[in-house]
Length: 223
Image (cartoon, rainbow, N blue to C red; front, top):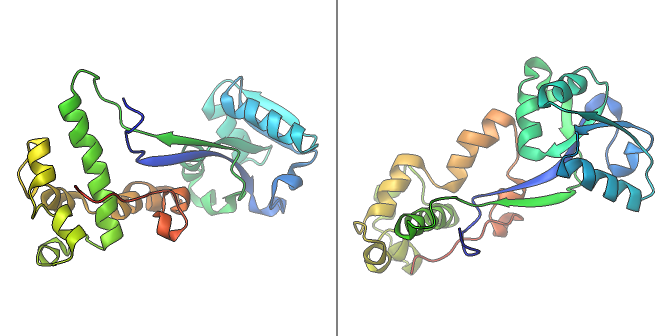
């Protein structure tokens, strides 16, 4: 991997609480029982953050995620962990999924980047530029449905994305219309997020929204 690899997802440590608890921020965790995986980074980050804020709490450590989920489901404790994992746990509560919400505070940030064999840099470049292309497509409003019409656009960024100048495609060793084919098959970044993460786990875009919409996802011209 390289420090230039573009993150395709920003995970963060959050706290999941039952709506009926009335807890709306970290201050509301005073004297609460908080569940976390034993000796995990979220457990240690929680300790550091709440200690710094002078918020006393009781820690209930679990060695297995299933045990933690069960304790949260019956409201024995609130939970802290990475948002993606807690969202999966909440989805498994089925009919009670909507009874649990995340506090707005984020205790830690964890950008997720693609991983591939270090010796296969050609493949790595294709992966990196595919991520960039999907984010750029969303920024330009190019979707799975309107790719054919978008190919007729005359603005520079759309030309570069859809391969009219051939430069990026030639550098990657791909056909000039490779991005159009990818978008037509999968949709843009926003469409993929909603299909695989947003709808199944009831997660808002948050940090994974475009930077123009308050998130951290930044598009990059295909040049």
